[in-house]
Image (cartoon, rainbow, N blue to C red; front, side):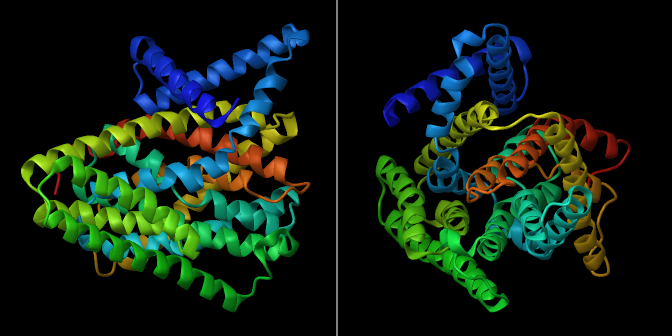
Length: 415
């Protein structure tokens, strides 16, 4: 099938699985689509065991591999999803929680990378660099998964800003750490020889360059919107900013995710306040909410069908259970240590650490990074562990974070 046929099929399946969830499961839309897709995938695998001559699994596996999930997400959908998420996070709220977000998105990612990586190294004997690569790709919280769940959890504003702000930025930091470690482990795979100095240069170019590009492009589009009173054109300009800006960032070798976040924050805050009429605000918000919902549905569908690309031998499943424990332990440390560092100057409620730990969902970015690894003997293991961690995170943590938040806040007066 060509790209248009595959896209058409995915849209049809997302609508069908979403309808099944709507009528029967009544779960949050994205999580429901993921579960239905997973059930359908496992059912096909089961049918293949009963009727091996059908060969459905092999056929679908080839189709799934042709989807190029990693490229589809990292170079296609991610910019739009991050831009849409950042539009609804106000800079004023982010400034209030700035130190919390900054430390968790930087030091927290490094702490989590080391703990998860060292755990895998000691428990399974995975080479140290490969284990640290796993730690890097599993450490960032996925903004798509997190922002989707936040809409259902009804958390208080300060906590929602902390979780959303961290998730929007830490994937860029995690991606830079991932690239650096891959460069160390696979210097002949096109990533180049990596050193400590090159790591700082890579971070500076990716993160600071992406932020500068996002700020510049966002400001240019804001100035244009300020002089235009035509909502279809202004919505089109915002779409061009998200699409074109991300691709320009890739061409320039700077962070596309950070570019999309900074541009989205600028348009969602300064642009909405000073550059749009009320009609444009309403259409812009409605358009990007719809884009966000549709792409979320497609992404979670893709995660569900990626099960065909994963090896589920008993040893790997047990390793996946270990990965769940390590990712939660690493997440706890990544949240708790920055909170303890800042608690001298800022008071945090008792629910911050448990909710941010349990609400730090992993998602499609982790799977995409695992799939993008150069071929090696450890890649199937890393991919399987990552996939199991992501499924547990989205389904178990995603469905239980709202009840956990209500339980922790029972009897407390909101600030």
